[in-house]
Amino acid sequence: MTLSEELVWRGFTNQTTYKDSTALDDKSNPITFYFGVDPSADSLQIGNLAAAMMTRHFIDHGHKAILLVGGATGLIGDPDGKKEERKPRTVEEVEHNKAVIAAQYKTVYADQEFEVVDNYDWFKGMSYLEFLRDIGKHVPIRQMLGREFVQSRLSEDGAGISYAEFSYSLIQGFDFLHLYREKNATLQLCGADQWGNSIAGVDLIRRIEGGEANVWSMPLIVNKATGVKFGKSEGGAVWLDSAKTSPTKFYQFWISADDIGVENYLKIFTLLSKDEIEDILRIQQDSPGARYAQTRLAEEVTRLIHGDDALNSAKQATDCLTGRTNIAEASDEAIAVLREEIPSFASQESGSVVEALVSTGLASSNSEARRLISGNAIALNGAKISREQFEPADFQNGRILLRRGKAYKDSALVELG
Image (cartoon, rainbow, N blue to C red; front, side, top):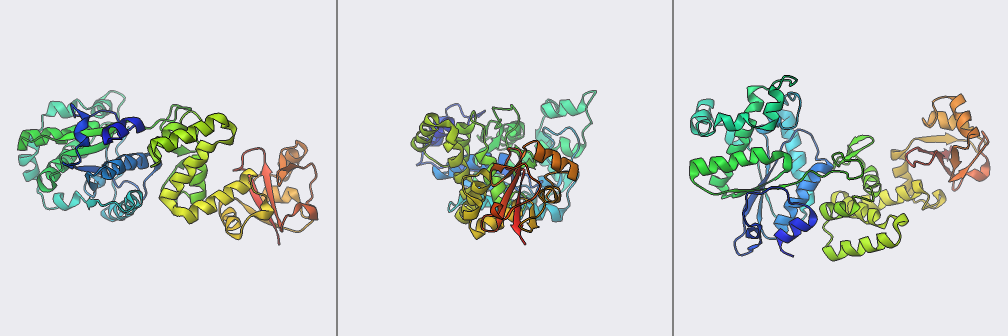
């Protein structure tokens, strides 16, 4: 499959300046491209991962990658899609975020080569007058005023916009011009929301250098079941940093993916081939209740980001929570993960179920705990109970998995102690 065919099949095609996308398929003439990341946070999210996977395919097909981590633009913040001015970040915050994000891209790109650059390096020595004279004079103000986010901010209900954020697209446009001059970069990859900023660079290259450059954008990834932007869980954003989203919660996010979108997620977030994904979908169709597609999706993405050891621990812990593995058979590693993922409680063999529910947060009070028990809403190791005391037989290898309702996130680990 050629690169242009793979981008279409995987869903990485939105807008492009290419008149003929097969220009991407000439392996004898590799393209130097760049992709920019604004270091506004100290980790990438799932939404960023989609774009990183798109760029990975360009690398795998022989093109040369430049990752631009925006030390300069990160000090301002991209205003596109934002209703209000962003809070400025310090140079120290941007430096920290930049280092973390670059390391995460190295994980996604595995052993593939790519160059990391920082636009602060070329902006720090440039004077304001120099920038206005050499760059600003070539940008029509009508073009900048026509941007959708500018119109929204300047509307009657808008929050207004500062000159700094108004100038953001001009700064990003110069990034493309600089990389065109210094690195022979002729292509920028971006998300759909960055189309306007990217076109600004194409226009500068044409006006100032008389050169030709292109943009390839990917669509916004949407959860088809809800119609909202993909990448959020009940607890908020799903991060690639294990300290912000644990490997187990990361794995569980993917294994909980909706049936409607799982095919798209397999194409976008994994490196599985067309034949492999079609085989997975056939198995899914034959036995949808087994959620085989979601399991493979969770395995592939968790392995890519966190490695095999973290994947195995996440699977074991999740299997305990979902009842696939008996708590008595859980390994020490799985139990250690469970202690981090769910509340735990030390009990005697004839300890109080009510106390355990309240102490672990599964009930807000003793009276609520008793109502849950009498309402048949509490299970020990998967079996419903109607009593308020544990019994020695409840403990399996010294442990009980206590659950409220059906959701495995509403569980607690009870251990003899």
